[in-house]
Image (cartoon, rainbow, N blue to C red):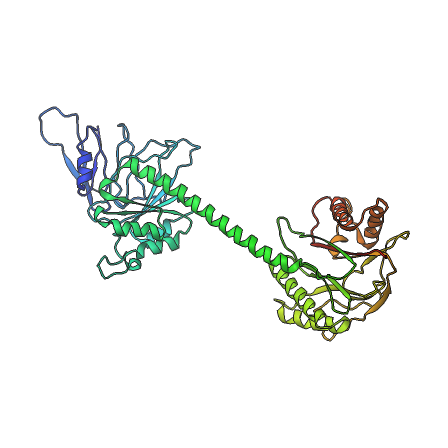
Length: 492
């Protein structure tokens, strides 16, 4: 015994398919009344089967709920099913662990819709279908598990097709779908006489176009797989281009944070190391610089904007550039730091942002230096035959941005003939020691530097060994940004 639900009339393509040898077929139309026919095997005669009208409500699938697909279970092999609002499907149930593709069809054909044979993905699993008669219904059915959208370009309200209408007006429905589903693959459906508009749809953003009269299950299945993979490739290409742009932006920021020192004509040697604290980060809020003014004085500084990320990095770039400009203009000590605080107060995104700073100005003979500290740890100095130690840090001023009209005293220090002066940010000393809560601190850093000096390390090797040892003691990557600068002088 066979149950056939007849709804609406077939299109010519469907009628041709219906003449096939299959003994049983199913077709569903969107609305109206169906007839259930009780049939028996053809005997070459006899009276017509009895019919009785039965109401057929518009269906929603469960558990393929909200998918708009209809799967009728009979004793016959699977046969094509027509979806009144899109493309139809009747396939064997998928295996419990299968993850089939899902197609959302947006189409409103009052003649009864489209009909194609079963649609299978590359693994032989049925492609799940959802149907929507308009864009409002499509937006409701557009859930994350939808992989592809099939849009009828003749959808009511999709725009005029007159010669005077612009391409945007003729493809208004497609533009709305692309806005609703920017990460979904989109196929458009049109007639063979509408090739130009179909090509324009692909140029606008659709992955491919199909003709109604040539539509069959094999073609549609292949087009869906192609559209999904092409969309994935497009998204991957977009992400790649985005990452390249981000890398270029980071490179520009890096050049701002970590500039080339202007020390031409000086007998001082310069070395620096920088490591952001965040995982996979390229930049942090630490910055440094060194310049030589026309009178032979070498000015160096290192600073740290509280926080991590591009905003802090951008603020650090602004402060560094401002410091270089003010230094080359002749400002020094308290006047320089007071002006930098004004720059910080104007440029910071919120009032809670502050920055610490350490500046040194080394006399032309290289034997003396002026030191200013704005909430920053004191530099470390090492001399031949003597243990490394911190420079005096009493009477230092507050961090920039904490107190209005603050003052920063300048302290004169003797360096000697041969020396190395290390400036650093607090990321180097705030790392933990092992699994406990104890931190390395300034005393631990001084001891660590002395051990490296005893091994004969200097210059960039000393900085690299110090940062690596701090990470090892911390048991992994340091949580804060680290910047270290080393200025060295050898008398004679």
